[in-house]
Length: 173
Ligand code: ATP
Ligand code: MG
Image 1: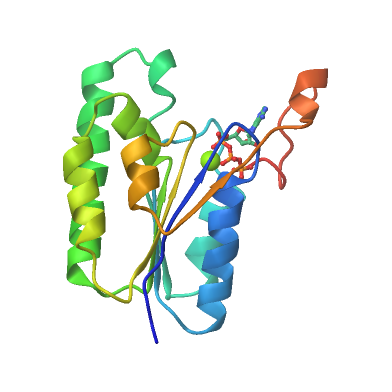
Image 2: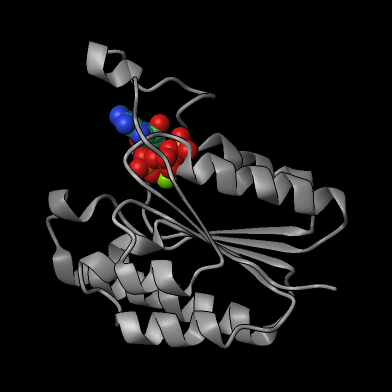
């Protein structure tokens, strides 16, 4: 029986985005089509973004956001870009051409009211029956957690950042 799983990776510890990408890696091995939409752009071009471009026509990679909202100089522009990203997510889900859709850092869009939580929940709950969706990001909302089939909270026990170690290429990005 094929059942699309709605998974949420949340919490303050490292490993949310990389777990989602691990599932992408696994899905690609089975020839499944994957779409990754990243709603927050980091400071560096990520290895996954560069790799996805070359690795396989089965994976699509979209970066539809700016930096972190709380550092933003133009909230209106960020919100517009976030909403455009969300529209792409809606179209991707409704088109039903992918086995796995990763909505990376989507939780922030809900948290900062850049998209309507009700709409997100509605679209996710009405996704095609066999489609897996993974949502990542800190502070997943209670309603999103209720809706999900699988929720994992990454708990920070130790992170080199606390000792002043800068983000490492090929490990953090
Ligand atoms: P990753 O992409 O490495 O799986 P993540 O998705 O769990 O991390 P985010 O909240 O999206 O974490 O943070 C993005 C960046 O911040 C990554 O470079 C990540 O390594 C780093 N990071 C994650 N957790 C922590 C932490 N607890 N302290 C400091 N930096 C962190
Ligand atoms: Mg992340």
